Amino acid sequence: MSEHVNRLPSLSEARLLELAQRIKHWGFELGFAELRIADVDLSHAEAGLQAWLDAGMHGEMDYMASHGMLRARAAELVPGTVRSISVRINYLPDKGSADWRGAEAARLQDPRAAVISIYARGRDYHKVVRARLQQLAERIRAEVGELGYRVFSDSAPVMEQALAQKAGLGWRGKHTLLINRSAGSMFFLGEILVDLALPVDAPVGSHCGACQACITVCPTQAILGPHKLDARRCISYLTIELKGSIPVALRPLIGNRVYGCDDCQTVCPWNKFAQRAVLPDFDERHGLASAALIDLFGWSEAEFLRKMEGSAIRRIGHQRWLRNLAVALGNAAQQAKGDPGIVAALQARQGDPSELVREHVQWALACHR
Image (cartoon, rainbow, N blue to C red; front, side, top):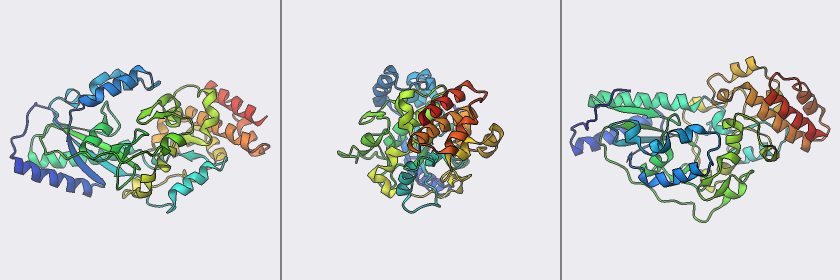
């Protein structure tokens, strides 16, 4: 990142238009499926963000509240910013079942299967997307000379969905994720905030219509209504963001999901158009698309750290990994009464050094009785 000097490069309108087209071409060369540009005025989003925070729906995600409205004010976060170059990059693995939604549904019906969110089965997207955005930013700087910028990918207090929506990358679905008419929602977002007054692209309208599929399917009913998500009930929050004990009432609803939840996406009609990843970074690693709960529960901490090197999953640590698996095994024990393998796996962890793990193991064993 270069230092900002609060300037607007003195490029002609025609030159900026030409540059914008070249930037989009460079983005495609770097593996981005689409790149669009928006101004950074998100004042329209501030009231909704504040209301969500005031209701406490962010749960333990204190970082959501600590920056306040700075999330909606890119020009304050990065002084001199006038534009956001927003990108999307597909993550649905190139290899896998043609009927990937059917395959995911089948996994959920197998109580012994460990279901891990599709996006987390490959390399950590934060690193992949940021590295490519950095390459793009450096290419722009080489073209225009001095440039103030900063790259992001779910890594700083930025309302990236609002910026992407404003740029026309899609619309915000009722599950709060961005949906693209040609690609569904199986993609990551990223952005470069720049002090370069590039021409902006037009936003697109919503095409959810009267569909309520994502709201209806949510296992924990975390989607309270269109565009209203209570993160405290969301399985992705419970298995990733929550640091302590998972609320007992929600444990049975988690089923065999051990890291994240894709239900609201797999059921979305627009994801019949989901596009495959072009980068091998998002290919499945360590058999995570077909892993068994018992096998993953048997990993030592050293094994977990080694196998999850470069994965987003590593961020939750071994204790929370075991916590999540214990809940899933408890639910499996409830469905598969008398399975000696499940009981033995849980009993082997009864004396785990972590109180958090022991508590969830005891709950899981009680499900068997």
